[in-house]
Image: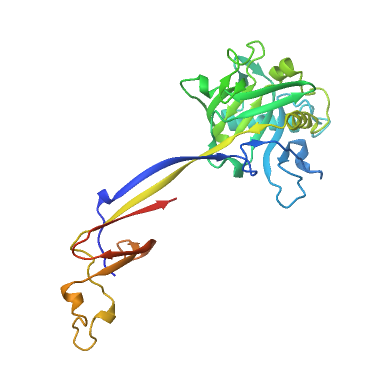
Length: 329
């Protein structure tokens, strides 16, 4: 074993962007949608959506659907003596704090202010670091009417940020570009907000009502009714596309063995135990070693990482070697 201190120029840091489908089906488009058949206390707030029946062993949550209303309409009050305090109002406040970081902000879709919304939150295990802009494509069907939604990232030159990160308007189109014009009607506002850094889609009920007549019930106090309406519309169209994106940082370490280095072995079998002489004369006149492993140590002689070569590397005074080691984390 031989040691050599590495120089600063022997280190290089590289960052690569890795994209993949967000769904556990490993398909770019999710086409099957299932909810749990069992009743849960969470049903008043949100409903998890699976790629297969929730009772199967391979079932995994893909995303969740929620409905929020500023005045608490659309769900039963927690206490009949306190009107307007309900699950939908709680959901509204939670998403408002998450997205705007404020308890007084209002949801604005394009230029239209809204008092309620549908929310689709992609499961944390699905999107890794964030969703890849321009890959969001969601079809929603109500009766015989269908609309295809995407984000407008392909139509803006400068990103806009909220407290939660980047924000894009949701429009009628594909792969980040509108089918025609701006992709939405100014009178109803955009179809919602696409928030890739928290993998959340906020849908504007007013725009959906005008385009495909999909509207939540704001008078009924039935918990989960509006969540079910959006689930039916999404599962009926059976097409939800989104890709995940993450940055993978790699450390490259260049280990250089010059012609005069690492040509002798420290293996005790090469040295006479009684005299300390080199046993094999060929190792004196024409030494040759075989490099198989590179180890990285700190200044306190602790082994931090080990890199194995695919095959032994011959080293003598006539050869120099450069071993590039890649560390991903």
